[in-house]
Length: 385
Image (cartoon, rainbow, N blue to C red; front, side, top):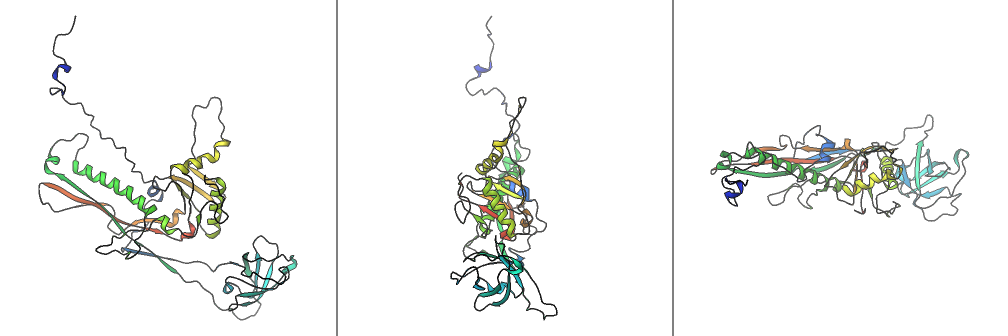
């Protein structure tokens, strides 16, 4: 027997008599992770000025390069030019990198840019010298009872970055605050949370990719103050496929990653412990072990992920960040990287004066990046994405 009573579908297209069935949840699918900030953690101290500075120092260098394109006989010549004669002292034992010959420096002509040596020192066999070859200073031997040598020292250098204000305005009408909301207990509080998520996302992006203005970096009434990001700071260890002897593959390889880590390790007393990549390069790192992976007949789970890369030059956590440019890989010593707020200016909500029937305010924070010893970090760029 057919139903003859009133049904929901007889109420009309808009179903005006039927109560709405709306889930009391709000779904968010926008990317807002801050993987790098999470990996770095909170800074041990805040910045105390909009101009943030720190000091760096270095030991006296123990390498140099031969700067001499002409030799009477590269196997027997005892005087030759070097790039920085002031790095040498009489009594230094030196050798060309990769060579078995040790030489003893007998005199230095700083003005002439040359050193005079004893070849084949200590019974070693003389090997040909070449322009541009790297010289390693093994150490100095002082004469017993000799006068003190002239003092040598390095000067500390001051590095600078500037704080950047990140802000977003929140405004909710009185009526919106009064009505009952679906999925939200307090509309003003919800808007604060949303804007804070956005600002944290933007902070990580600026920490990686930010640039300071070319002029007036301290800011003015017309120049916005912006912080330098990690990519802006790193100058020494920039690796590009096919440049300077770096392997020419445009797809990231383990050989490239190891060479970059070794080069940074050679120049730094720390070690890289964070490899920060976008999705494309994360997949390449995962592929390092793909050919060696084995699965049994009963294996029901396929795992294709490398979250920690351990090499002779450090144990590195692999961090996936959306904000790293797709063709680049960041190699960071996290102990030398701090994202710090200006004192009292970490992200917070500041109410504004009421000028009508609404609640308004600003979510704001002021932060800067301290990246110490830029040669303790590196970046591989020019990779295929």
